[in-house]
Image (cartoon, rainbow, N blue to C red; front, side, top):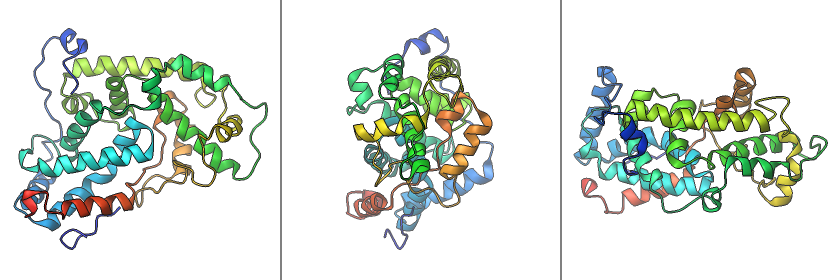
Length: 312
């Protein structure tokens, strides 16, 4: 509980920036939505003034989107929880610096992206410097000749797909990964995403183009969901994933993950992917994951610990 409110559920200048010409900050979109912005300004003003209920409302507004951003960038839910916690605490600590130049969530994404791009902790793919080609070769190892027909076949096939699409993202450089996530998964405009990543729209589009080309080429020659002629089928990777411990049949990390109330389920995400049938859909068609309640309770405890001057 926080003030009676239960919490529910950069990198250095790149060659892209230099090549894009002007390095003026991108204009933050969304500011024309004056009514919504006015509501957010009033909420933040109350939070900055020490209103614990308002702080709880800010966290509640941001927690699930920030968790989903972190999850896409760091792959594993436990690591995403850690990153989300740090990002949300930074947001609260710096609420008084938000000037309404962008919507509150857009600004929080900017705080989050800065943190995620500079994380010292690396994913296994980053540590191994695994390329998409190497990742694809690994998918050939242990590919069954027939679809998995063991217990919970549908659930485990979903889990393999969700886990694999998360893992392949980690084979991109972080700046390309975040570009793809913001534009093709979260469907933000290039102007908004450029503001979040503190670059120009032209530089952002170059990064996005590289990421989409690499992922598109990889999926077309590898993934049976993107191209029925490709060799890899999720249902034929289940046995190997179980053998390697990449999928836990008792506690699937993604297919059984709680979702935001009213949000997209695993089944709905699967239907969207089948309907769109392209690279972006294969990677983007995930449920609307909710921030785990136990971690949100822990964050509420930290916010109430006296560490934050605005809550004293």
